[in-house]
Length: 268
Image (cartoon, rainbow, N blue to C red; front, side, top):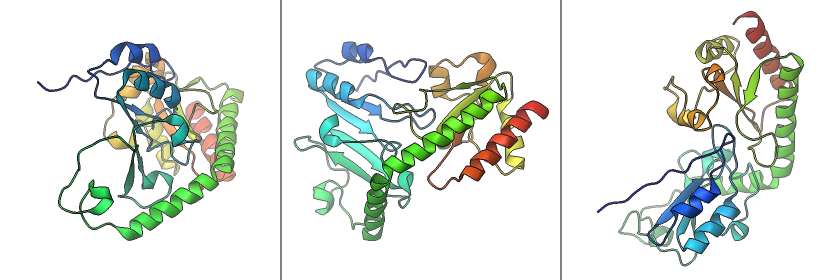
């Protein structure tokens, strides 16, 4: 009785092993659940290829697109997924509201019974102001996607070029800047440095970074993502994520780069 859960291996850039997926799915597989864009290292999976594997195996595919919506192109007709979940706070919408896309013909049990709301899938009075805010933020995010992506990728490339010019020893975890990586996501590991000390010194200068996932901010150990992609030990302990957003300015990017280089060279 019960269920067996299989976890897929990933390569050094965080992409799943598609052949492993093909070998794992069979007539007994209920659902494959994939995160479309990784929140730590920015890897954007090839959902279209994954959906083809699931379709051939006649199994449901759920995609966690929380990090992806309004940050990369997403066409449901092209991806052909069965279920897809997103959250408003990831594209400047209200916190506390999300959306579950269910493809026609996909059968799931109701979450809360008793009312007719949300196509009888979740009973209870709907939060109309949040729905309006969610919808408007989604419209604006999609409309601005092209400009947003180019600007954040330009900032990211500028960031890395400065590190290279100063001969800083670092690794960019995840894919190169481009279509396979979330714009504005810079997960960097610095050789023979202390991540907690680096975070503290940046904080003193008004620069706030993450040493892992925001969902697990209290952990001081390397995250499961960093372990899975096998970051070398002499880099792993100084892994930090810089997040460049829609309202980040060029002056702010330069301030961060200048102070980061100064700290790495003179205080560590």
